Image (tube, rainbow over all chains, first blue to last red):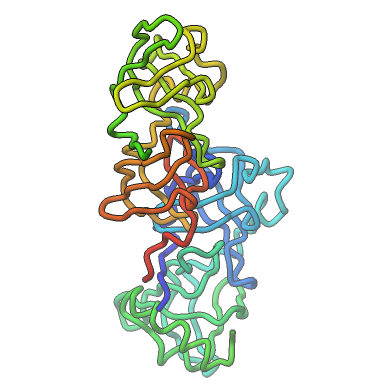
Length: 186
Length: 151
């Protein structure tokens, strides 16, 4: 059983220092690498009276954990100026956005379109599934292998993914490990 | 002897050298990394003053004894100013695990009145050893992941 959350639930979460207990920023948006199967970082808004876009970014390596109520970092030095951040965090490539992409099985069946990312709660940004708008209508959740091919318009998933389409996050949390075991993944 | 943050709030602060009353305990400032009380905050806002733990001659059940009046100092840095404004008060703070999940509200903290060492954190009906405290600030007290509820 894994505790999961969607990327939309992360937007607006405070960024809190483990050592200082201070909310130093809040999440504006997530930057995702479908090839790596994880977040590469998050962009930030300022907290409090100075609310508004922050210049600084938070690279995934500096994320201690993404939780249900906060994104944790060790201390304020975890926030990086764009010029000090890895290029894929400082200048995220827009064509890598998977939202709206068609999810196709290797056999050529369309499962639906990507609506949101699903992350492992407590990890540093591991993406384990997608929320999809199902081809037949309605919302669904699919598990992902660690890596997959993405083109910018479609992504290809193993055939067995079709057996693992879930109605909610709880169902997906229970299915992730079995899905990975069936594919022989860790 | 074991004391608590809640019980000691409002306790009078006396000078050992002059036997004068100097004020009352507003709250206690902690050094989370050392799991230790750093200072006693007396009063609040612009008039707030701090006494370092080392400047106490005793933290008693009826009064907190300060060696002399000179031990009362106005806030000296950002952290002490934040403490004077009451923003770092541990009791009432949200408790957050280092995994980013809320564990509840910190209702009270117990400590050794002889040494100022923190003992336990009380979160709802749970009693958590202070060794789990990793950091505390104006937003939250952060506890290690052993305090994470199992899914």
